[in-house]
Length: 375
View (cartoon, rainbow, N blue to C red):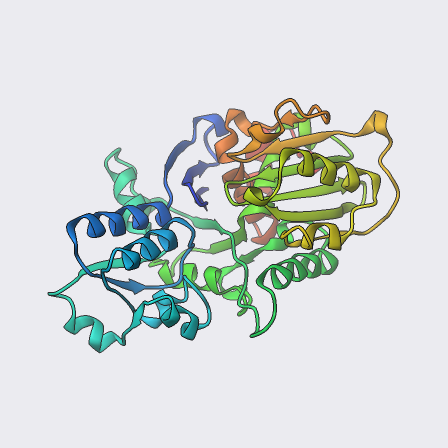
């Protein structure tokens, strides 16, 4: 079984070509610049040249590309965008227009082609990845059995509803509906309509002959960290993913997910993060403590504390070094020897959980033929 797993973050897109016939460590992999970073570089190049920009395509991850667009506008150059691409900056297109971006229809966009630099917006570029592998004699078009893609999706909050609150209520509802990390993974035809970034990725996939799985990046990274035997064989653990933009920590126990919080990595100090982890372990963390400090929120499904002598904290993510030296003495998870691919390994595990018939093959491959971990 050959599955292409792509974990699309703010800084990088991490790519694993999982082959159930190989040892996992020998599977082909790449860590490349994220789509939003690549688009930001293209916009900055246009700024240096003094060119106006036309953005077409679909909604994608913001951050770096949004900041580059704002700088381009401040420099006095024009930015045109089709409605589907403009939703990257705000679901409210009136707010996008207030930024100074000129909204254009498809006909107007075609008429502008000779006068502006046209840039395509999308989180997932199958052709670029397939071409990269083709240079090493790997034919994805012929051999691929499935796709698994992770993105961070705030969801399309109704007018007047906080994006942070909307995002966290979605997380809590998914856990209550199905208490497992793969509850955040969907086959392409089952992606909820509110998850507009995932829907945009589905629209960007040029293959309709293979299964496509979409998943949230943070639970994918945590599920991937659990593929490290030092973490996955624990009957209780707190596992944190400290990403470039978002920090999420799950409290896991005998009955599954016992609690979770999510915050913005850039909005919290190391001391705050350690305190939140303490309260998560103690069973005293509240939603208000996270939300009122500009985070998304927290929920606990039990208020009992984890005894000090049994507390175990594992960390993954590109900014995991924030907890280096922490009094929690965290374990830095390295599933199959590669922290950067944690999200991809989580995607593969979720693919096996969600897709009927794939689980046994994937379990056998991930466990090296020796059986399945507790998670």
